[in-house]
Image 1 (cartoon, rainbow, N blue to C red):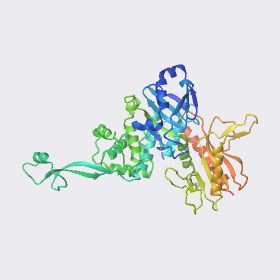
Image 2: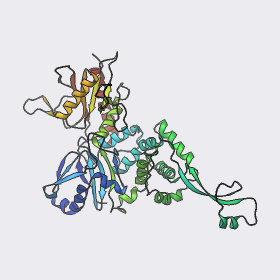
Image 3: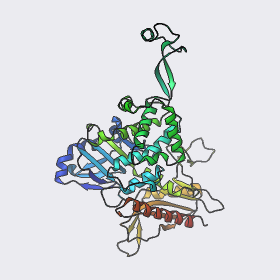
Length: 464
């Protein structure tokens, strides 16, 4: 496997002559096809699964990157992760991550949003981070799928007993029941929990159990409960049947009720077939795993604000939305603030927006001063949220790379007070630690930054 091409999200990279000559055909193919087209093979996972309802992105037009200057310059968007095609492997790191070839920040966010206890890690950051990404996603996708119930589908079964429940299999009956002993050989179709999908999940569970990350299956009560349900539902599990189970699952799930199983099925196939992907045995298809940075940042911030009294609407699921129009209107203009808290005895109404953007920078003309890089659409968005929720405080939560040492150490910045109906605009930043070499040390340092961010939000916003 060749060394991957290292990129950063929302950045540009000039290709040197060797990279251009080696990869221009593959890069052109990836840039000319939309993400939706690239995922049709089923070997590329993209999270979230539908971009058209998130941040105004239209998944029909979304591409991985753009080629400029005759193909000698790559310009990336919000997607990060890993993608491979033929002899090309591309790693897209977070632009807020420490400057190295391993994205500890992305790995950390995946662990936090997947509910994995980072302090149970036995090793430092793995060299196979792509595989780590897949494993860290498994508990999250398992819980999401099984929240719809255990997957069931009709299975063809063969029986030979006295409880006739289907058409008699004459040839089998003659061979097994001569002379007649009271049993009848027959075939039937049953709506069963033990099927190709649950067997695939069971094989994935057993595969993870044999590795270094087996603790992710026992990380929380829900995960343990769902794992137990799969074990009980698959009494016919047989390790030797794994290739056959994988082959049966090449056909994707298409069930209106068990909709989340489609994504879990793809993930399980990625995990079980990772060695084939790694060594290029299926390199004619596009494969890998990608994440939308804005979506992942918002989900990660939600883990930081948990327990602070904030409501986290989810536009993809239609949860927590607010109607911009009054109740007497026949129309509904729904909006979904990222985080808001109603006015209470503890403090005023607050609305916060998670932005995976650089909103702070040093003022080169005035030493010790900072500049706010808040775009017009972001200003109007937070103003409308403040007005709708009658909030006293509105603001943004954004990452800040550790290289911004010239900025103030405080997490909270006061941007200004709105005219008209009023409202304070704040900006909260989470400083991403530098690459200290050990992943555990990175986890310890960023946890300290999370505590400081949570403390600053509480101290600033919970007092009128």
